[in-house]
Every structure is written in C-alpha cells, then in structure tokens.
Length: 395
Image 1 (cartoon, rainbow, N blue to C red):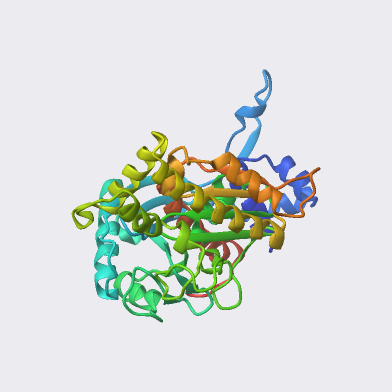
Image 2 (cartoon, rainbow, N blue to C red):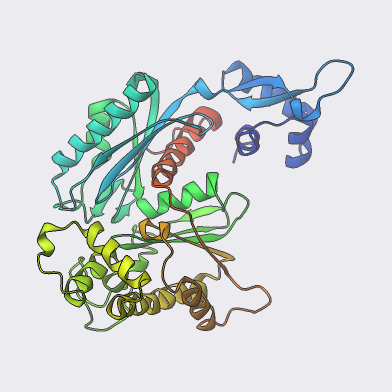
C-alpha cells in the first residue's frame, strides 16, 4: 500500500490524528508525513482541525488532521428478500441518509431488479437533497455466488437468470462504477470498518436469514475464493440425500437453518391451515412465540436447527481457527432459543484450545449494517483511485 494511502487510512480509522501520531504509528519520518499530508490537503481530501484531545492552556492550539467529508459520496445497497436498503455515506464513511423499499420474496428479472435499485437511489438522494453527480461510486451486496474478479452474478436466489453483468448496465445508467459482492461479505466489511472487527486482523461472520452465509477476514483481507464460491457455508452438506435446498441440491446446511426451512417445518408441525395467506415472517414469529411459551413442537424445530448450527460453527472453527465469530441475521434480533447451548456444543465439537477458545458473539440486529458494508466496498475503491492513484478495476 502506498505511503500516502497508509496515512489516509490511519486518519480515517482514528477519526482524526496529529502528524506526530502518524509519524510514530507508521514508523516513518516527520518530513515524509509533512510532505504527504500537505499534498492530501491540497487535493482537498484532508483538512487541518484543532486537536481538542490535547488542548493546552497556553500557546497555539495543537493541530490534527481529518478527512474532508464532502470530498466524495458513495451509496451502499443491500438487496434482500423482504426489504432492500440503501445508505448514502460521505468520504469518512459516516451515514448521510438511508432508504428502504419492500421486496418480493420471489425471484425477478434483472430489469425488475434495476427498477428496484433505481427507486432506492432516488429515495436516498432525495432524503439527503444530493444530486447523483456528487456520488463517485456505488457498492451492492446481494445473496448468491458472485464472481468478484469478473464482476458478474453467477447465481442469486433473487434473480431468475445467472451470469448477470450488473456493473456494465449500472455504468450505462448512472455513469459511475458499481462494485458487487456477496451480501455476507458486505457484512464482514461493515464489521471490519465500523464494528467488532475494527481492531482485528482475523474474524468470521455467519449470517442466518432466509439462507445461511459466511464472510471471512484473514490477515486483514476479505477472503472470497478463486471463483466466488468460497465460504458458501449454507451450501456445505450436513446430510446426504437430506432436505431439499433452494439451490436444487439436498442436504445443505441452510435447508435446516434458513428461514424458508423453518417456515416449511412450522407449517406442518404447528398445523397451520392456510399458510398461503400468511407471510413467512408471520409464521416464524408465531413459531418463535410458541417456542418461548414452551410449545414442544416449536421447541423441537429450534432444537434441531440449533444442532445443525452447532455443526456449522464447529466446522468454521476447525477449518479457519478464527479468534472471533460474529453470528448475525434477522432472527438474531430475538432471543434465539438455545443460543448458549448451541455455542457451547460448537466449541465441544472442535479441537480448539481451551486456553484461547474462539469467541462467538451475537450481533445486535440493525438492517442498515449490510448496506453500510456496501459503502465500505465503494469507499475502498475511491481510496485506491483518489489517494493511491491506482485506477483499479471497474467493478
């Protein structure tokens, strides 16, 4: 990473920093810091501010540096089954505006998907009273298999067609680059930039929603695999010839853990007569409430799903040995039945050392965090192009 980008990233991660701090933290000369920060100030991406953290009673106030928020704006978008979300963020990564639109759980064409994206962008720009001309990049997260290098959606449960080149069509519509990735990778980026992973070089994120996903940060970098199929935890096999997964295969982990899987079991176990008249969320809410009330059938569904979750988490620990796994998703906003027992069982199924066991944390639910991770993807691109001088890929 070029030295000027290291300086910029240090300032962004700390909010503000004095030149002396940067010199010490990056182990570089004071002269280099002075020269490079002067360039960044001249380019309008850094500015000097009074360092209130080190206020003195006499003499000139100390000076710190911070990023100029208005230097650029990005939009982050998360596409999902029940609701799409968008965030407009400034160059520091702070949220300027948000927008949400309802989503149909059914698959749709790429043309329909772009109509939904158009609506989201119009809403978030209107909320911030900003023109699209001030937006320099857009990040997009969606479920499925994403070929990050080729910038194509190989397969997504949201789309009827595979191998879709979304960035090219987006650039034609808006004139700015679109960067796409698996939605769980977006969540991992959000944790790395803004959450529990901010001070960690290695951690994993496991999501449990309509499907099951995983993101992994290793040595400070997001791991994607060679063809975008790495870390598809939900499609690892836990039962040969088992339950039918929405991917078309049988025995996948998410066929026992995903919201659609629990809904499928709830309709039968709870004897729901007219399930077609109910939304999946309503069925799951009924299932959860019955489990909390002690209903044996509902408890059995969660207990069975919990055993499979333990297996999935144990495999993550055994394969990657992360110091932290963050478990997140829509259902984590509730008190998930058997959570403590699930995590203990996962630990017991591994060979991990007892002196330093993997920490498993539940993330408090905030549906904006996915879209915020997408802003981080866009900001990463801008940092490379505006700060380091690299042109980077178009997606």
